[in-house]
Amino acid sequence: MYQRAQYKLLKERIEEPRRHIQVVAGPRQVGKSTVVKQVLKDIDMPYTLANADSVDPQNGSWIGDTWAGVRQQMQFYNQPEHLLVIDEIHKIDNWSEQIKREWDSDTFHDVNIKLILLGSSRLLLKKGLTESLMGRFEMIRMPHWSYPEMREAFGWTLDQYIYFGGYPGGASYIKSEKRWRNYINDAIVAPSIEKDVIMTSAIYKPALMRNLFELGCSYSGEELSLNKMLGQLQDAGNVTTLGNYLNILDESHMLAGLRKYAADKARKYNSVPKLQVYNSALLSVMNGRSFEQEFTDPKRWGRWVETAVGTHLINHTDEWDYRLYYWRENNNEVDFVLDRRGKSIAIEVKSGHRTTNKGLSLFRDRFHSNQTVIVGSGGISVEDFLSHSLEPLF
Image 1 (cartoon, rainbow, N blue to C red):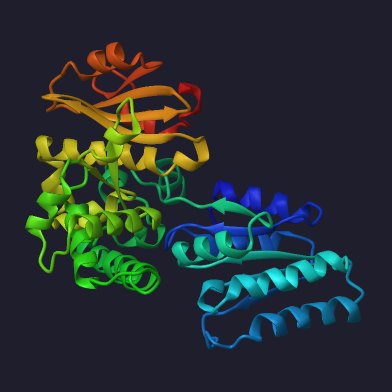
Image 2 (cartoon, one colour; image 1 turned 180 degrees about the vertical axis):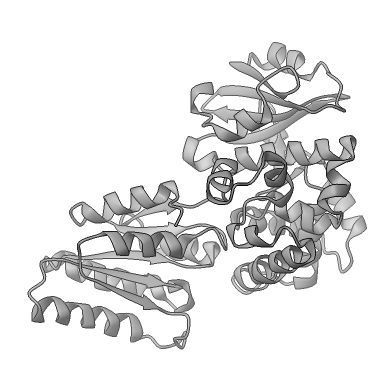
C-alpha cells in the first residue's frame, strides 16, 4: 500500500520519548486513518485503537473509561509504554477538556501513554486544540494528494491529475466519469459541507453556504467580487456573511478566496477575491463537462492547468511557510504571488492559448520581487513544477 510522506513523520514521532500529543489533521478522504494504520502495523509497541464515531456525544465518561482501560493493560502486562489512538475524537462533546485532564494526569504521574488524535472535521479539531490543548500537541498536516503521489500510487498521467484532482478513493472510477462524479459528490462534497462545515460552525443560512461552495468551485481561477456573488446566489445574506462563509470553506481546505497582493494590509483585505479550489476534482465536478470536452478545448483547458498549479501552491502554504496571493492592474496580471516574510515570488501560468502580458515585469519593478517564474510554455514545464518542492525558489 502506498505510503505518504506523513507516514515516516508520524512513525518517528511515536518512537520518540513521550512529549506531545500527535494530531493528524486534513480534509476528508486524504488517507489520515490509512497512515495511522500503516504506522500501527510497523511499530513494536502495544496499542489501543478507539473510535468515537458510534459513541453518544454526551457520554462524558467515554474518554476517561477508554484511558483507564489502557492504564490497566499497562499495569497488568507490565508495559513500559502504550499507544492510544482515538479516531473521530471531535464527535465527543467537550473532548479537548477531557483529553487535557487525562494527558496532564499521566504527565504528572509519569505514565507513558502516547496519544494520536484524528478526525474527519478539521474545523472541530482546530477549535478544540486551540481552546484547551495549546502547548500539548504537534500537528501532522495531511493535504490533498499531489501529482507525484497520484502518479506513483495509481499510474496517472499529468492530464488525468489536472482534471480528476487528488482524491485517491476515486482513482479507480475515472473510466466511468458518472460513477466518479457520484463518488466525489456523495463521499466528499456532501459530508464535507453538511457535516464538517454546516454542523460545526455558526452557519445561519445553510442553503447560502452550499450555493456559495458550488458557485465558488465553478469559478475557480477567476476573480469574483462578493457583491457579484450575492447577485448570483439565492437566499443571499450580506457581504460580511458571505466573506465569513468563504473563510470557513478555506479553513476546511475546500475553497479559498485569494487576496490581491499589495504593499499594505488594508488593500489586501479589501480586494476582490480570486477563487481557488484545494482540489481540481471540485472544479471538474461542479463544472459538469467531461474530461474529453475540457481537454480538447485549449482555451478552457488552460483554466484547468492554472487551477492545478493553484492547488499545488495552496496545499503547501503551511509546509513551506508562505502566503498565497494574486496580482492585477488593469489588464496586466500575475496568476500567483508567494510571500514569505517580505520575500515575494511572482508566478505566471502559460498554456498554449494564453498570450504574454506585462504582469511579471510590472510586478517585479513595482514590488522588487525576489524572483519571477513562468510555468508552462517558455518556462518550467507544468509536470516538473507540480513534481517538485517550492523551497528552492526561496
